[in-house]
Length: 266
Image (cartoon, rainbow, N blue to C red):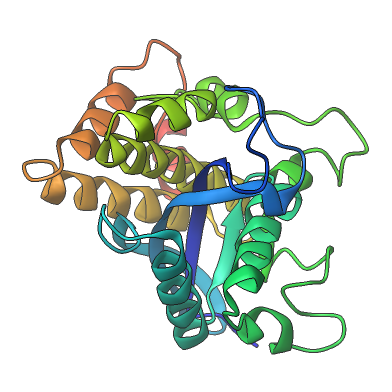
């Protein structure tokens, strides 16, 4: 199956106090089913092909599912409906260890079908296959050779590449933010992680030969244009772009294309 789009996906959760009423504030519940989902966010992009090869990833949106007042059941129902309709390539950071197990386990609580996750593809190429990054690319696993070496955090790699990293919060603060009624801030923070993730995926796609330098640059330009278009009505997207542009790290947004390199060498 040739996917025609990707989603760079992240979720935010709080401890489900109905299941673990005595859980300590700020402590991370180890079991996926103990996490109540409060935000599902993603960057969505079309995969544009030329002669069967991906040439760029054209960003369509960065958003969170549903509205701020939606409950978990409604968020999950609409997310899995959306997923079934699009069957996208999924990009996550530790998504095999956290995000997708939570999304599936919590759907099971409410009796929501996630058939599109389990039934797509073949025996060796499908969302459940650990070694099929063109279906579900867990970038943390890819960069650690499936944890053969030390895993890195999203923030570690984002900052190293000159990206803003985490802005507007931290996962340990989400429950307190929800209690204060700051769900819009939680959704904005989650979207920031998705923006970091999209850029890291594009750089990894270049690293792994899935896109060439021109496609890398075109994909990031597409993201920049999306953020510029949305910044007036969604200021956190503009804030991400401004921080990225103002980084003190000597890491370029764009990489030299072969034509540019040849010109500079003459």
